[in-house]
Length: 124
Image (cartoon, rainbow, N blue to C red; front, side, top):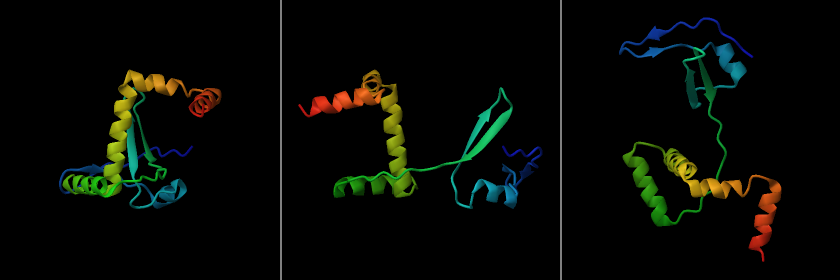
């Protein structure tokens, strides 16, 4: 585990607070300019964790009308197309996780055996 004991907090000309991460630390972490980072804060532990977002690729098959609607929405929200898709999918997943019916559905696939039984029943 890498530990940095002291970080100098600076203030920009417009009042925003920031700190610099040394180049050797960035290199060890494998972080580069443009990487998306997530900041988590735990006030009880008086700690914060900064971690790099790691993405998986998902192929989507969108018809032209859906693609166009999402592209327009992304433009309206000043987002890239991919970021808009990510936002839509995250919102969908968050809503599904709050739905008791979705929770029941997920429980059916808690084990590999359950998933196999469900797959076998579909083929009947």
